[in-house]
Length: 315
Image 1 (cartoon, rainbow, N blue to C red):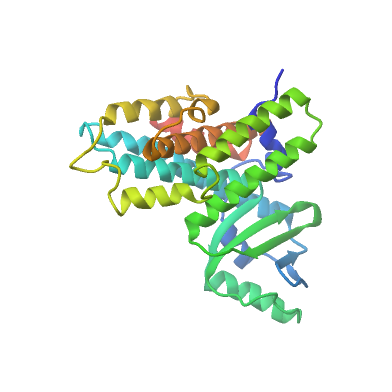
Image 2: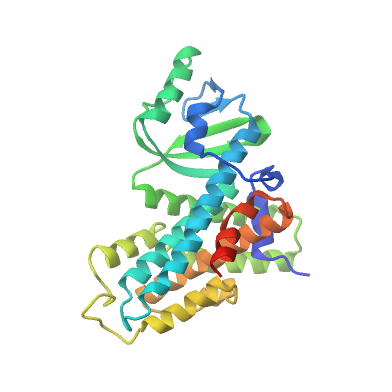
């Protein structure tokens, strides 16, 4: 039996996350302010060592539930515009945010948390470095950072993000992680036919969500064009033949798990069509990864309190 994309994504799972049981609480931001750790000298990264892995995994699990539930609820909210036959501005924006929230959740399943750290979190880190007389690798100020779990060494690494806002940081890391997954697949013990199929699917996926790799934060750019510049005829006065009913039909296929991952990666179109398919592909991919983790984790897995709980309550 061939390996699915969701199964291949296990190669990037944060070790131990599948064993998290019960309802998780807190956030990664709160974990920084409340947990015990000591700094480790490094020239390029903030390294927090002596970390209680379970407490950090609990924070990750809580964030995954929060973000994936928000994504599911956002998809549900798209149906509100069904009475306006050609109004697609807000549906596109909501579809983007559902994809963004799902991408956030998947990155945390992979042990990575793109986060904007504020003064409260940074003071805690600065105080720890000062107490141990370890020099900081760079000046800490409120900014976008990547927080990454290293459970094997009981460490958490914090890297300062490059230029761009919070949305760009997520798409950059999502792109980089998918590229890393391709490497992991090539190095795996999978059969060659499975490797080839998985690689082809990921290559098409990466190309779709990055405008043929011309812009790794392309989804954010498209959302800006729609939301702030009212481009592509999605706002009144409308242009083109797209209808809200057709848009909702595609969204419903995704929410009912009737759409396959590959069904959105082989349909070339104009920018707005590709943007829609990119968001839908991200959502389908992410839902598959989350469902696979829930299945492996068992009935008491933390995801029991995540998006499925919201979906069952609103069905």
